[in-house]
Image (cartoon, rainbow, N blue to C red):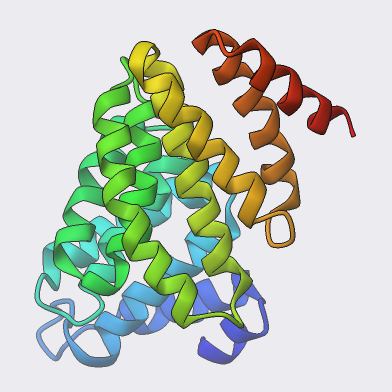
Length: 231
């Protein structure tokens, strides 16, 4: 299974992991622990990586089953994080938010990424919680800043930090009023720092900064941001 997974042969990997995960003991009961537990986790991960809706729904179920059977397993924090990602991609933002909160508490190494997605989920759920999203994303920023500084060769770490700034801007923009100045500053940071690592988001941030400045009544600053955007 692992070799097929590494080669991105996901259907073959899912089938192979499934054979190991389904092993029974001498009494016919399902085995747990060891290779069986690992196979169950990696089968769910391969299903998640397939990304189609049916696979995401099945992956979510299998991560939940893994956590129920193996709550203390070393892979459990990652299983919860990926269960949350499944919920997020299936647009169950309220369910994803609760799972990301738990993942952030369970594993410090996943906390920055979990808080980023939790903040997004809070803003996307119905009804949205703009204040909660802004607060959670502010908590995520220093963690992701640390990750980016320690992983300079990994552009995805910088992109996650750019996302945190951008989505905090979105949350502050949604709050309006006195938060508009902070929203404009958050968008400006994305444009200033991440034009190389996340060019599309940097350009979008410039437009959003102009919008925040307009709503804030800063017409001269809005005009400058708009001129930069048109370039």
